[in-house]
Length: 380
Length: 145
Image (cartoon, each protein chain N blue to C red):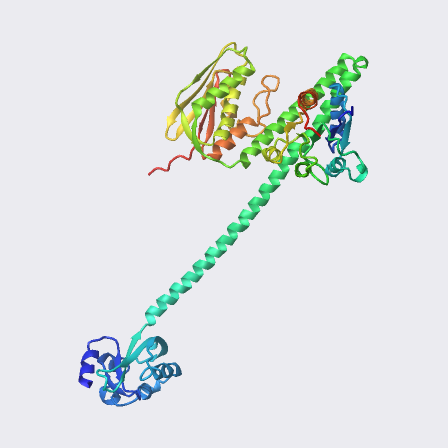
């Protein structure tokens, strides 16, 4: 048995031992003697717990090995930390089970020792990394949640503000308008032309203020609207806006040229606002010409670039950058009425799509407004 | 025959006066009851508080309802009216400054019959009141009591 056992255990590179039920060494392989600085002469016949300066004699190992022979137990990867000659403190995994060649043979203890220090360290590091990763994920999540909460709060504030603007600022305007008109009506016989003129001015101011509030609300609504992209027939949209312009002022002589078949992936309602403003502007700024021409078309494909061109009043390129600021106006209200919010709204919508809007023109020679509705593709 | 009343729910005294002026211009002969917040409106409709003992078989011909009101707001008034078996058929016209989509949707969801935005222009306002009166007091068949 001894020779048989020895021949098997010598084939393995990890330290292996065969002990009798008193834990005395029956046989051990070369790696055991080498690793733990013992020789077969010193070792065989002695208890494992007496060897190597009693370093094996730890309560957990004793308890585990006690349960094996004659008791049906096994030891599976029992990790013990101990000094190993030349290597210092190592983590050893011990596996043990009962072996018996024949039923009548004496049961013995087969014991394998594996140095798992590196594996354990790697596992510990992995564990530490995981913990750190989880901590960072939790941290970032908390940050995001906080940011989200702030955003939601400022969004709610904005909602409340817009609501007030829409509701509360209009009420006093209605009062000014209503009572000044009532004054004009009921006191007509006591008012001279001068007084009626002033009252008209009051009412004009009110109308303008009302328009400003409405336009500002539209601008803020753009910020609050969530973008939903779908395939939109821009040509059809432009034609619809053009038709509405004509309907409002059927007397004007304007040629609309809409390039057919233009489509884009964009938010149909928001882009409708863009075309309303750009085509509406073109319509407005060609009002002084006896005949005008307004075009809608595509000028480039990558990224798709669309334009609205007119041959109207145009503008001085020196003021190009001012065009898109809220309340910026390049014409007096007497020449061309407006609130100066339309192009700011256009810019906000276009940027919300990841695009850009720009203008070219010359005084008296018309204007061209170009826009894209997608982020330019990064050069590959 | 009893003259049907119009219930105007309006907290802003300017708007109240302008609405009454507009009714006068539109030659609305109906009595106009003014409630200055949601609680007053519900008191009138339910015959509670200062309106205890009112004959509840008489529904107003229509209720003109502002949305932003002290105490109980317009949408809540509407919700309670639609939840009340005696009041649920009352024609309710939301008459407000707001054109916020949210208000429009919630107004209709809660069962408003109509939603009219108060124009800043008084001429338009008078016109709107005239049209409301024409539709809801003349053209529209009121629900049977």
